Length: 96
Image (tube, rainbow, N blue to C red; front, side, top):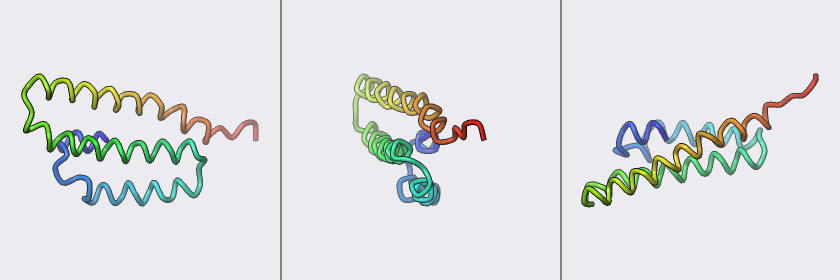
């Protein structure tokens, strides 16, 4: 998602970075639990929304862009906060 935001959505949904993410997501889905799969899907869907946001905001007025930007960043930050909780459970090997 950082990549999408850094590129302002230009050429990222079907680009090389998106392909690599989808390949990594597919491998992770085979190894990790449903919470990780849901999280990775949420990232992919959010990246798609950010792509649309980046292409559509050029047509909006400044107040509309500011509001949309706040919503996008709020969701992005929420995903970052979830990341550690989601993966910590998968990577807890206990006392081995």
